[in-house]
Image 1 (cartoon, rainbow, N blue to C red):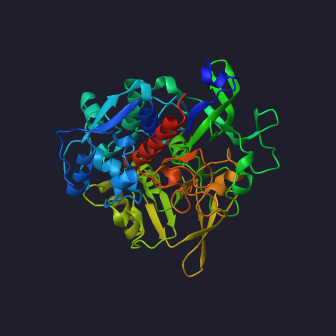
Image 2: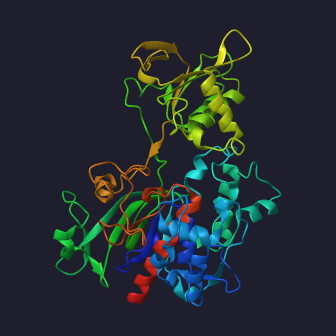
Image 3: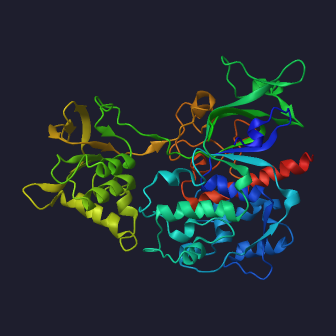
Length: 494
């Protein structure tokens, strides 16, 4: 059944539409549903400077305070000041092994709820649905939790535990779906939605709103600020797409005063850009390897598979193949001892399986029962081309070329956000407007204390699109956006 708001034809827009239903969108929905954080008066934060600031305004919710003032002097593992603040309030002193409880208490204030929709392709959980359920998280399990429902408490109720303080992707997906249900957020979520367009609306002569013509940029910069459609002084957007229901696929169009982009970066896997990469034996996802093993397309007696990449997804593929006794050729561009290599940054005791992969990479070859090797490491190698029949040409650091016969190739070198629903694929919103949006190199340019786009008022970015790549820190962006939206609502009461 189509959600009521997606069927609306009224001129009254929704205050907020959130595109993306991963942990970022879930956390923001919780805050916008009238769940307001206050500091517990009996709590004492281990950071004395922050504690003194908190004591100044104990009767005022964190959302209503001067967030920029509270963040001054905070340091940690994120470059986002609001991410550091919210993390410090939720998990005091955690980076130093502290076990202090959150200093926050949550008050349900329905009168402060901001009507909103959360649009997602999958069930709540976002990209976590695409990760094999037995895979372990990079972050500690406790850091995967959302406000006011600790992940470890949910795990204990399920009679499950962490391994090396880490959780599986399957547990995380279940937890996020439970969280949405437990916190009463389901009414805000619409699954099976595919957003195809987000447009700024324009004012016509009769003061109604219409989309800008296709041959013009839909984003309003300074020279066209007066032409934008406004509702009570705020801009207006139109979100179009289609939703899959029991009865089939139906288009939808909804207007919103504010749009939050929270679609993450896992939609479009990166390609090498070499000849033959489009051939059917070349894949770009770990799921394709799992499917090939399930269908018995590859096995112990196959030609080796090729895994390209030196990140954690490539490592997961190697571990999976090793478990299934599938021979592997592993090619990557970096040196094994490169400090930038992720394996050189992970504690060995906490990540033994990734340390095992790193050791294999160093040893160059790992023997297998039989007359050939199960794993061959090719550091500082580049792929030149793929060709019919499963042939792959490599080039080493000296420029010499070599060829291998492979059964399948899995290019696992990262992914990029799919922002095709935005004009110019969102590049006009990035820090460098001449380059594609990238969570690590070129995120959407946002105000650090509101997460509102510096190029387009009313448009916000959250999570990896704003440069926050860990669940632990995406929640600060949700706090910043909720604070901004609630302040807007106070300025423009219904």
